[in-house]
Length: 157
Image (cartoon, rainbow, N blue to C red; front, side, top):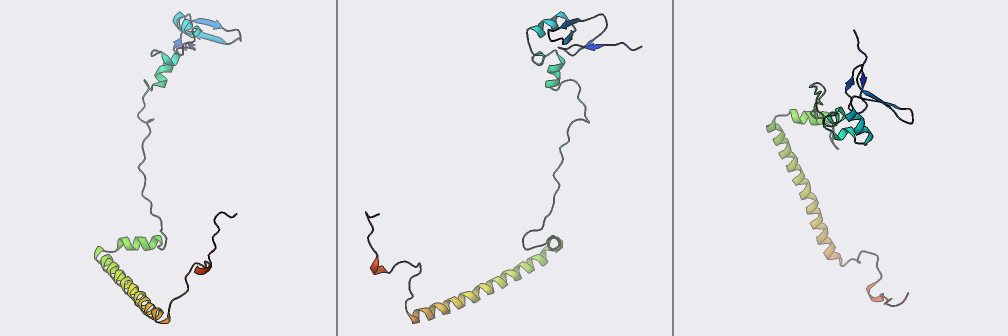
């Protein structure tokens, strides 16, 4: 046998037949309270969330129905590899797959090649400097007025 129950508008408890108190407001809204206490608190405009014994307070403070499956599981961030400037993803994977000894040997060869490249321009620059001294002084860069013809513009607008 099914019993028709109502919910209290204030406490949200179930009200069985023959119990409770109805209040009909001027705007024709029907409020059904479980007890005179709930009715009095409603009319004093005391929020049910502030009273620990009401369902509203329990809902706000996460009491009661705790479901293990409903709790959020924190997901671990997955590692993702992207290509970088100057190197594709395939190149990166090949480099990671290499044995450390091979990688060190290749890096050493690259450093040596860089050092050789750095020496060549340095030698050329020294030779150019030696030629420049023999030719004579160059005009100053910057495109400014010649040193002798600078006007004094102080105070004039």
